[in-house]
Image (cartoon, rainbow over all chains, first blue to last red):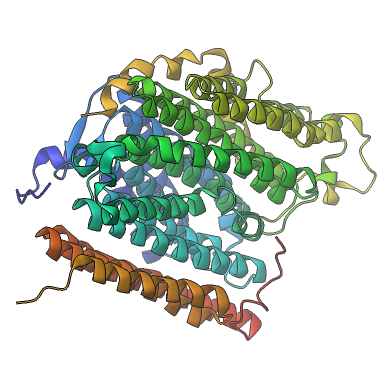
Length: 509
Length: 102
């Protein structure tokens, strides 16, 4: 841990993904702000960065290689690849989706794509963090560009408010996380999670001989989870999400709803299992309660929304709850002393991929409901879509069915792997959690399929084109790509699930 | 020579953290709320520096420097946002910045 060797090539190899994203992000930021007409250029630069990152991830996923760098602070293993892949896809499709929005901006259109790349670099840092401080740094690198992007329309009241709310909640959750990490460091003498697990924590439940260490570790771990819970919008720390999602420009909301959630849940998995695995019998039940709360709050909230962005915000909360199931199942296994817990990692990766495609597609569809990207759109506008735009309606139906998790779609395979990861814990309370999750899925069918019903079962209202669907070319591309992704994952789930063994093998040193 | 034990530092830092958190929840002015966040981050820095001394480990001190830089970054973005909000609404009170209802 206390290595003072100079940075070598192997260190740089370990942070390859972060390097690509940061370099292309900075180049895009420079080009975008230096040249007056640099928006297209900077978008291309960012896009190339995302494509390169995605390609590296896709090629490496399933090889089971593991490269550590910076004295064990960062690791490039299959879980990192699997978590960065959906984030890079989300970034790429967000750029496409944002083109219409960027053309309406008078100032600062060039910097948008650079900020997007930097935020994704933050996710890449989180995905591979093996040191709590590296994780904290990743969270900050993710959050600060997103504060700016939420408030990107400076003259717009709602966008401003959204950015300010996100900033206040985000900075306080960062502070909570920092204090939690500080307490863990005070108790255990290191911030490296592998060293923690091998050091004082290895004593596990018998660590109670020192009341100070026990109390400090417990409180520190709790604060850490609360801080990450804010970032991933888990209940009861979710109240900011609907407001921020509604006020932010639609492309930004799209990115919010996918990247940070996947990265935060992945980070939770790594930190809790690798670092605090010996305390699993404490945190697994607590996370179980949080997951059930998150799903229920998200789904019940979404039931009552009549506007697209708010509804998808609540649905995103629910999906973070589903993803948490894998962490809980793995925790329960770990608490029983089984080493099978690593099997759950593939569930997070698969669901991350499936969720990225279906949610991006859903947002692309919703954003076609109006001419601008700032206001929120009433879902009533979907009425009669099936008659007027059969392709768009078909894509929307596909995304909604997949988000519900109806067989055989990408969402179904995703939920199946998550539920089976949770069931594998083999305790009664876990079965209850999974049953509640299944009930929640059934509830969610109502509000997802309502949109399908709107688009197929109602006659188009004769209010003219202006009130209905305003299709944009870039939105169509996003829907097509996401649709292909959803169908591809549905037909060939083995593409990701086949990497399960490699994923398990490379998590632990 | 008498040493102040690590526990004492942690208690002081915890008090500072709670004061910051309470201020964040109770005050309505965005600027004061940002200051409260700074207090909470400072609490973390104190624990890091004290623990670095207790464990004879340099990392904690480096992390404290990190935290100071990160706090500056957050405040830079935060103040820019506050200025933008003030331009639009002529107020930086969180109760008046509430068009979005959660």
